[in-house]
Amino acid sequence: MLYHSHSAEETKQIADAFAKTLTGGEYISLKGDLGTGKTTFVQGVAQALGSKDPVRSPTFTILNLYQTTHPYINKIVHLDCYRLRSCQDLHVLELEEWLNQPDAIILTEWPFEQMSEVKKHIIITLSHVSEQERDIEIKEK
Image (cartoon, rainbow, N blue to C red; front, side):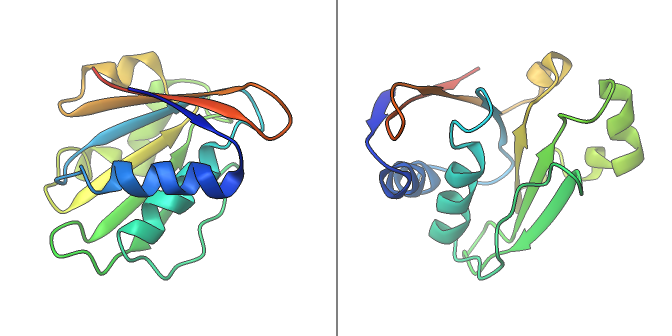
């Protein structure tokens, strides 16, 4: 599915609609250049799932966890692999414990290609169209 966003607020609205399709246990790869709105998209998902936590880019923390008030998705794992050297570095974060958990979703910015083998994998690609506009493609792997 391809969407066209004219603003950060519209990107959050697209993320809200996307969040309503989630059932739990999804691994979501967020791809796109710097400044395309990956974290903005996560903010929209978190808000839609009832998280009251402030959603910030995990570039320096590498992993952020957010609680939700959603009836069956209780945890959002927000990961940024930009500063990691390889997929092996994820073992330190104990990411395996979150994979395929029915009450959690994982949203990963700058994902490793090795993670594409995960069940329930969704790829979201954001790209610049103009200063404010973005194309957002959502597809299941």
